[in-house]
Image (cartoon, rainbow, N blue to C red; front, side, top):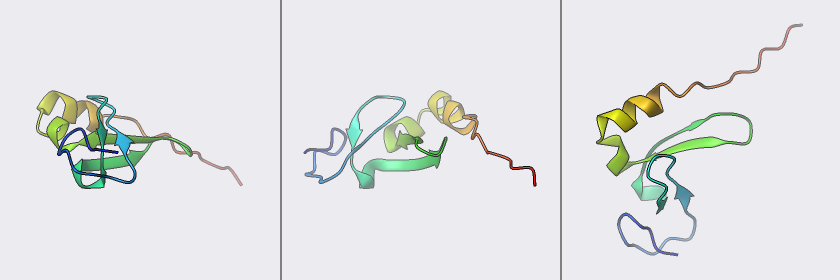
Amino acid sequence: MICERCKKDIVKYDTCNYCNRKVGFECIKSQKKVSQTERAYICKDCWSNTKKRNKYKSYVILKSTSSV
């Protein structure tokens, strides 16, 4: 596989949620856990775009609360 941002060979890739490019670990700026099985990724190029960054930061993380 080849990273679509830096064009380096990668073993594992993740898809940026904002530009839909397949990027390697070095090109991911941040990630957060959205649910137990999903993560939200943002690449370094999208991080420099303030509209996309604000959209990522306002992404609501669903936390399960257990009442004991």
